[in-house]
Length: 145
Image (cartoon, rainbow, N blue to C red; front, side, top):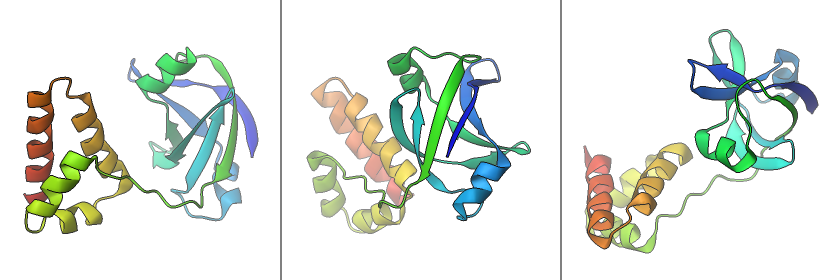
């Protein structure tokens, strides 16, 4: 499904893509369908979410940096229903920590892909080895709380 719109600026710093209700309905997958998003040739996977009486797809700061887009820019959006499984693999050191801690691997498997991605992203952002070890311990501990 293809449509043109403008990149929505929310709260002065967040951006998103407003999806017309008829586009959401066309997927026949409820109000939160997983989608493959193509914005002006930049492709990523996301989920449409109902928020504040409209349907939105997030367009995060890393995507803005990659594409050079800002809130208010005109965009061409192409969406397709995403039927591929959403798999987030933990990095090797985190996987070892999960397997070494009773209940941690099971807790990891129950997380949504977006929550898994948040933990993995925090670990990868640790620039020094000591910081990475702390990030692994923090993520593991968070799973067991």
